[in-house]
Image (cartoon, rainbow, N blue to C red; front, side, top):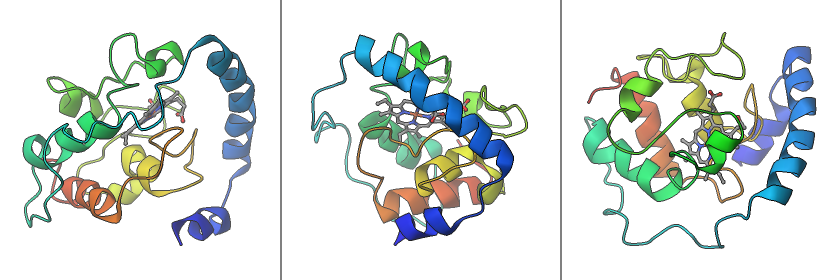
Length: 161
Ligand code: HEC
């Protein structure tokens, strides 16, 4: 369902330009860096997401990152070796997202409190063809509908701690 949505979505000439440079970068990257083993999501990394009315970073969002993203977005992770300084482990992660520009395209903001549709973080977990780069988590199944919706509502509600 979301796959169709991504393919049907508008692709600006800009995003095509950015995308075309990436696969080559990845071929190099993938050859040099062994990927984490299949099924690397640790089932005991925090409790499963809960459908909460008020979404909090600490209770709801950080556990999603811990389970699905930190394997690459941490010190010396694959994200860093691809030139993405973003760390999603607990600590700085929330402040490193809010109002921060994408390193790939500084016109795109990672988290714009109140506006998920214009937040690159939300676009990259919910769209097969985000405005820059690939759908996250890279090389893995998309997040569940509930996880994606929690991220959406977290941003909508102002990206609270
Ligand atoms: C297998 C490694 C890997 C995993 C797992 C992964 N990422 Fe990434 N991420 C990357 C790489 C490599 C890039 C650079 C290419 C791109 O932008 O698509 C990236 C880029 C990003 C960016 C763009 C940063 C910027 O400044 O433009 C965001 C945001 C992001 N990832 C969020 C996430 C989230 C959230 C998750 C978990 C749901 C996740 N990633 C899981 C490797 C990964």
